[in-house]
Image (cartoon, rainbow, N blue to C red; front, side, top):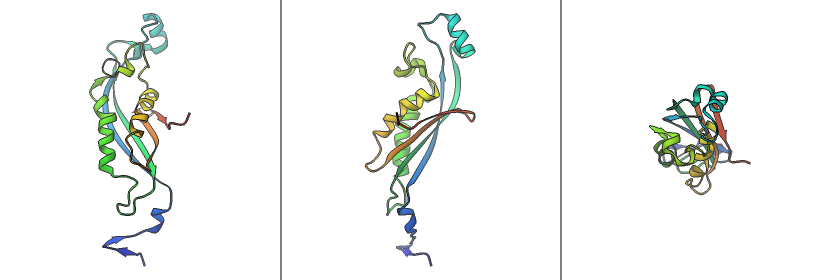
Length: 156
């Protein structure tokens, strides 16, 4: 028989095994691979059409995985509404509808190229800093499309 308390089914194993939760959000952004310290010819040689102005558009997906103990009352690693607010503030709002090179200072021309790897690494510490006590950030995955993505785990 499955134990029941206050109308909720209780599964004791849920509270004792390591558990992670992944939430994905989407954003649409434009970016350009271009280094101003290189000539137009060198940029084209290395980046091909990805170096052409004004840049190119992607429908990105960012999947964030958090890990922690399952809260006994809520049966969750963390409040999903809180995670959604964090992802809205740290991923969607700064990137959605933006030209990453022009609108995000970290990816301004002459700084870091806005690759999947760089976007994931940029978002990782911002998301990690906002997680509740006892919850850790396991991974930030940024996908340009189903065939190209990068994972940042925060591990050097």
